[in-house]
Image (cartoon, rainbow, N blue to C red; front, side, top):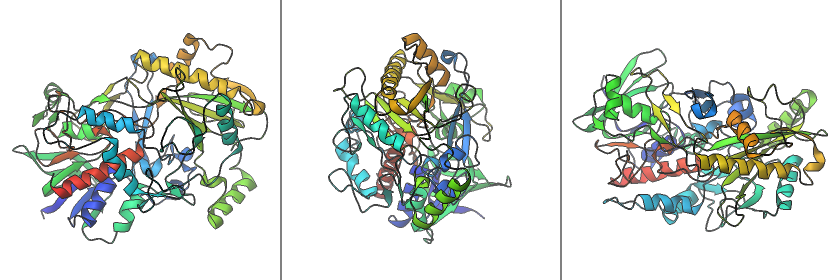
Length: 540
């Protein structure tokens, strides 16, 4: 039997959930949402600390591996991505961050050359952010209280997080009560996409309320192999189910690819949309020659520093024995206590070069000794604190390529983190700044030893070596199917997220952005989905 829908959304992540639900409910369209991953109902996903159980091994994550990075002495590192309905919003640390107004004004400036223009300036996107938000503390020109996405202050704040905030203030940085408000600069406590300790993912906020709507059909474990393109128009998709059976579904409307910045370009290339020479290498017929597909990969690079506490401070051993039982019961009965914390309670935005200039570094304070396979042999498992520094407007650019024409093969990902000398220079200054934070009261009074990097050698060469060894993704890949002006030969999309040269095909996720925002990318991804739904419903 031939199946047909008004629209097909490929990828049930942060953007895809928003698009599909809105098209089905407000647009009254019959929508098929195809998600390769699992259902989002699971205790580890709902509880904020579950991220630490999943990040290094979980069926809810897909672990891309980079190609060997020559500028990092051949290192290969993982890029975990959500493999579940809700995508990153179902597995991340829930930090609610939009970036700063200048990020979107920059997009608008880049896209001004389009004849059929859509505004992407801050004044254009702010209503979408506000309309999606249900904030439990803030209601003003920047924040809304009537949207489906629940945004809240942290349910629990560890003492190490408070000492971090005080120590950064001792360095001369202001306290910031709202990183999404008038100014990004300063130190404070993040807000999170949850309520009473329960995650508010795109799946919970948008798909759950539409579960009984017959217009919305959600299929999990549905891995899309390619988009069907005939005579320059997207007409459907081919996917396979867990049994390996192949299905073809059609649409008279649009195919909207929202599979994320690593998989969306792969799907376009498998569908014959991409660099002609690269497609020819893999025996794929070229439907639209777009050299920008898979190029312009941007990600926020992060580098950790870790300190060992001189007492029982932080979350170490809080999950063992009677404490585990006590904290679990408190969360279950009252929705409060340590289990309501994702660990990343406090953070900062600073510019070590010029305090008054726009921040160049974002920091996350995690009140644990965060151990992974790179640090197991270097840091003792004890009470402590980890601070990660992130270059928030990186200049480095990487790429995503096909490994083969086999849809089941992972793409080749080369992010080039810190390859640009300016990015490395900025990261070194960020590391040096927060090493000094660790040596400031009241934080310094609770620290026995800074484990990595060595505080005895803070030369550029020493810190650069540390950065090259430990840099990894901040889980924010973007830009691989970027929007661009009409004269931009590397632009994959126009300003309405439509694929150039193919009718009825859009890409709507963080791969569409012309540059990455300064901060976490989940809220911007959902904003993109919200805007895309409006464009489709208007027939734009």
